[in-house]
Amino acid sequence: MYLQLKQFLLKHDLAAILLLAFCLRLLGIQHTNDVVFPEFFRDYYSVSSIIRGTSFPLHGPPSILGGFHFGPFYYYYLVPFLWLFRLHPVGLIIGSIAASVGSIYFLYKLVYLWFRDYSIARVAAVLCTLSIYSVRMSNYVSNPNLLPFFVLWFFYHLTLLADGNDTWPNTVLLGLSFGCAVQLHVTAMIVLPLVLASVLLFTKAKVTTRSVVVFFSSATAVLGPYLYYELVTRLDEVRRLVHLGATQLGAHTGVLGNLSALYRFAEGTLVPAINPEYSYTYLEPNYLYYPLAVGVLVLAGSLVYKLLRHQFDLNASSNIHVGRPGVVILISWIASTVAILLVYRRFVRYYYLIILWPVPMIALALFIFWFKAHFRMYYLVIGLWLLVCLLELYSYETLRSGSWSEFYSEYSQIRATTNITEIGAPGVVVH
Image 1 (cartoon, one colour):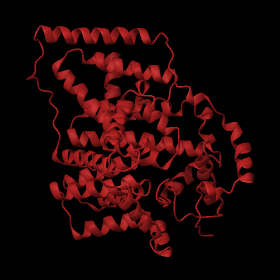
Image 2 (image 1 turned 45 degrees about the vertical axis):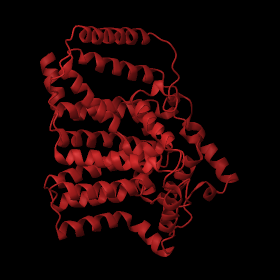
Image 3 (image 1 turned 120 degrees about the vertical axis):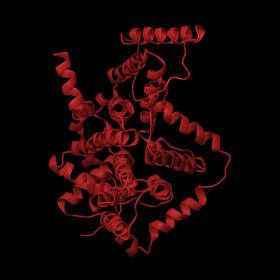
Image 4 (image 1 turned 60 degrees about the vertical axis):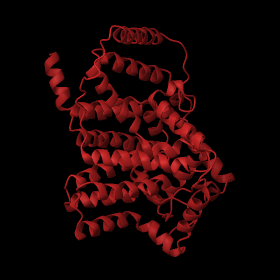
C-alpha cells in the first residue's frame, strides 16, 4: 500500500503539489481583510467597469514614485475571474491565487530544465507551496504580486530558447509572457530585458529574423493598449519613467541600507516568523514549539559532534549540476536586480523585491541537497522547516480578521464620498 501510494505520488507529483498549493491559498479566503485598502477598491472599480462595458483602461495602476502608470494588463487579467464570480470581489483574490499556483507550476518546470533533476524541482515547488510569504502574497491582489508567475513563465520559454528551441510556439509564448510581465512593475521593465540580452550573448540561443519578428509581434499584441496610450499622450509615461531613473538611480550614501533590505528579504521569505517586516502571523507559544525546539537541539548537537569527531566529509559530492542557460539566467536575474536596487536612492520597499521571488526557495532546495550529501540527517532539516511553516500557518490570524460581507456597503460608501480617480483609477479610457 505504501509503495503504491509512493509511486502514485511520484507519478503525479506536480498535480499533487499544485492541489496542495491551491488549498492552502484558498484557506480562509472568505475572511481576508484586504478590502480595507483603497487600492482594492480602485482595482475592483476598474475591473468591474470593464465587465460592465463602461470603460476600457489604456493604462494600469499608478506608481507611488515618478507619477507614471504601469500597463493595463493587470486589470484585464483580473476580468475573467471577477466575471466568473459575478462581480463578487472574491474573484480578484482568486485571480491572485491562480497566478500564485501557476508560478509554482513554472518553478517546477524551470528548476528541472536548469538542474535536470526532478527531486530538486519537487523540493523547490513544495517549499514554495508551503511558504507563508507566498501564501500571504496570493491572498492580496496587487500588480507586483503577479510578477512571479509571468517572470517564471518568461524564464521557462527563455531557457527553452537557450537550449535551441526556436519554434514559433515557444517564441510566441516568450513574447506574450514578456509583454505581460513588463506591465506589472518597473523592476520587470529593467531586469527582464537585461536577462534576455545576457541569454542571447552568453548561450547558444538561436536567433533568426523570424524569431525576432514573432517575439516582438506577440509582445506588441499584449502591450497594444499601453503603446496606443503612449502614442496619444506623446510618450508621457516614458518621459516620466526616464526622469525617475535619472533622478533616483545613482551613487548615494544609503547603499548599506538597501543591502540590508535585500538580506531581510532573503531572511524574511525563508522564515517570516523571525523577521517582523515579513511576519504575517501572531505567534504565541503552543505545542508546536516543543518538537521544534527538540529538533533544533538534536540537529545542532549532531553537527557539533561530527565536527569534533572530524566526521564531516568536505569532499562529498552533492551531485548538483546546472546547465549553462540556468547559470546565465540565475546570475543575470539576481545580479541585475541587486545592482539596480543598490543604486536606488530611496528606501527599498519589500514589493520591489518580489521580482526576485522565488530565488530564496531555489537556494533552500539546493542547500537541502548539499546537506544531504554531507549529513544523513537532512530529513531533520526538512522536518524542522516544515514545522516552522506549520507553526506560522497555525498562527495565521490575518486570514481571519476581515469580512467580505461588509465589502459592498464599504465600497458604496467610499464611492459616494471619494473621487475614485484620486486613488488611482484609470483616467484615460475608451468608451
